[in-house]
Image (cartoon, rainbow, N blue to C red; front, side, top):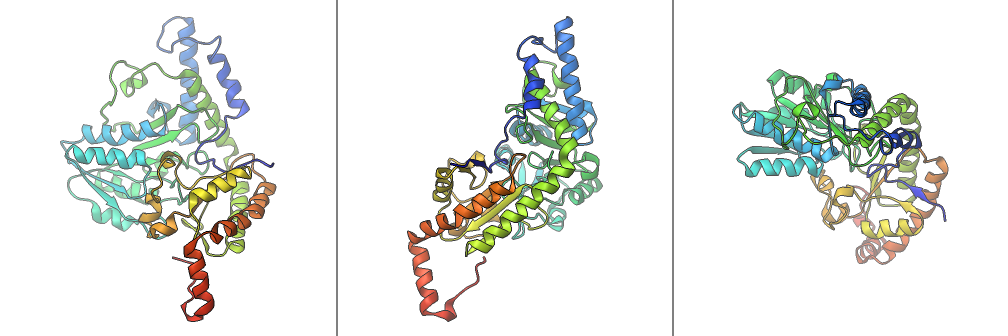
Length: 403
């Protein structure tokens, strides 16, 4: 049976070059970067070289990179740390309704601490409107947080325009770039961000390591206490093997991004066009053009998403119904609901995200097996049977395959 991995937004495999870079720091180069002896100095040198590579990926200065355990910790530190540090200036925060739960749950936590949070709506294709951000700003606003690209539908947000607005108003601006960094150009100055979250395992690095970009002069209160590591931003002995791997993955992503993005975008469009053409009552979710090059997402009406994923898995295809971080719940995607989809339609969400190893043959395989699988599942759907019967008996009742 053919095996096709199309869940790269959930995680990516560690590249051989990354693993090779990490191995010495799991074996003979085991020093603590904070130690003063030779072992420690060698570890410190490797740590700072990795910091330079991660900084280069986003156009930052190395001293502005704080290593964390991943994107979730980076988002928590950005929102909670900046809110606490700037509470005397105001207690109003603006974010969008389609953020990753690392941001949404941090914002809800802050709301319980007495901060006021505005959750902005989005358009039908998942875009935050800059005019909505502007309208939400008050004299009490201290933080705006809008993700660079959405993890479920791939829509790229107008972060640069929001960043300019935030700078004009003197408001701290954070963006979650976990899905975008390494796939499309990310430059902290062009985006106008003060805080930016990154994750290693989304770009073929190891799990358990990420980073927060903190623009020089940005006030941030620590969430953890106990040491002077990471310029006192994030205490605790650094995960040196993971950080070295992250640095190598960042360097490779920066080198290969232009050609790889073009290749993946062609495969993505082949997949999206094929799905819509071959499966009736299927439509693309997210913005058709302003989307990540590797991200294909659709809704298949009259199909329960979990059954679709299990059917694909039985035929060797790994896919997702949305965020991997919420795969344990049967609730419809908060992203799709915010985009205006009905719950029963949102349940048919399918996210197919491509990576380095995927080929046209993989796409063709999915386009071959998915239509009959959908047909089989729809045959057992009372809603589909009822609507199909209505279309036959009452042509005037037929509707377009859209929401």
